[in-house]
Amino acid sequence: MGYASHLAWKAYDSALTPKGTEVAVRSLELYYAQLGLNLLWTPLFFGLHKKGLALVDILALTGTSAWWAKSLFEIGPVRVPGVGDLNPGWLAVPYLGWLSYATYLNLGYLVLNQDDKPKKY
Image: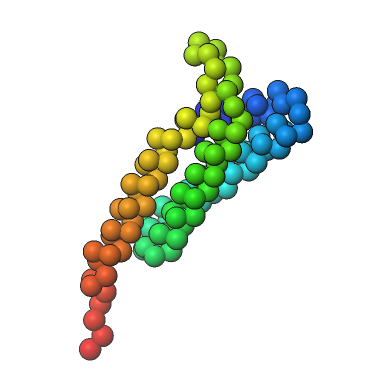
């Protein structure tokens, strides 16, 4: 994620057209948005025990990250020393896989533990 955002900055610095600048800026904005959503999830799930709100957050995080990956693919290949041309979108694919699995686990926790709520007598 960090290196992909670095490549987006690099694309911004070397953009020759307004469209190239716009795509790089959108990519960086989405990166920071998903970073903020990512930072919220842990305190929601583990600290505040708001599993439903954490699910809403991780769904928004996954959607934002998918949009971010799409914008990274729009940047196009960037020259990486020692590697050659690399599209930064490929660096976001493992993260999207992880987020999909984490979303599944969050949802599974809610579904499987809905009967664990204290009973009112």
